[in-house]
Length: 485
Ligand code: GLC
Image (tube, rainbow, N blue to C red; front, side, top):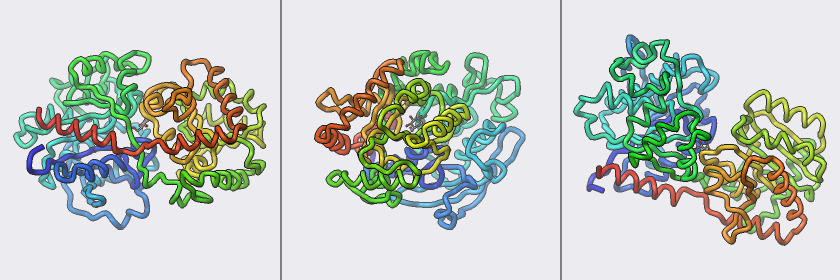
């Protein structure tokens, strides 16, 4: 890369440790810092985020107000306050607008299209306000998909943005920002001309993710296998024509996520009852007993514990779970589930808990502290997703010595290799038959009785490095490549 550091701007709708609702928040919380560290001389890294009222209390007084501008969205002219915070070589800019972001949740409102159109447009206004035009903009998921679209339309003839390169990362193709054409969303909400509507049009609807894919120089997703899978109708949620198009243009990549090994570290984790590392993982048993006690389960370190930390939605493979769990609960086993989601699955697990009170606990919540207690206490971590763009829980579980059992799809397939192979670091199953999963779980329960084998396996699992080092290099290579274009 050239002599002077190039400016890289991430734009995303959530980031740890400020606010997060899932894996995207983890990635935006850790990847920019890692890029800043690994490419100090070449890249100057900034991140633009919405300022939700749900900001983590610890940061409330740390953000510095640096000014305000106005963001135009069709006939609207909206306040855009800008706050700044710097850490680990990364500059974070927060866009303040209480009308859009002072709400109970991050997403799920009738005006999400308008909220995130505002955010995407305001992100560009922030760049202008601070007078830093990026060399690369890296946008994530549909909420920021209009950033590359605005650059190709509204700012097309703007000299300042002439050389900006754009990358759009799909964290989950299921959520596309897909709207009916009837509501005049293109002109009235996004403030775009109908002449540009074709960029966003897809199957007779307005699709922000499609617009982002069409407008960006590169499209990436969060694992190599998922990058293949989304070419097929089975995984593409309707976007297969667009995914195949960007693939043919040579614009599609898959780069596996990593986890923040400093944050997820059983040797230092304050959430645990007792900390441990690779050499002292027998202390997982202490964590198990404490958790059993806390949850009112029979306290016995010899009962194998299966953990699940998951959004309770269909693509997490919960129908397989539904099919086999009652049979599984005949075994000597304890199961702990943490998550929120569809009331259908929440209800199912709550019913099971009522029926199998001394074997199963279902905690319907999003609770990071408790999630790490579950990773630390579990012997086995179950993640049978039907589709999984990357998945981070299997990596976190490994770091905490809970052996992952996964379905071979997406990032799960790329990160967990069956123990049958030399390089194995977990249990896996293929296909869509719940009883195949059941057979593998049964096998793990047998293996658990073989103490030597189990210890050997836990050691393998904990030795696997799921940090960002390899993937950060791949991102930096892609940034270098794009700058040369
Ligand atoms: C989404 C995906 C998940 C991925 C995460 C971070 O939440 O569903 O598989 O790990 O984004 O990229």
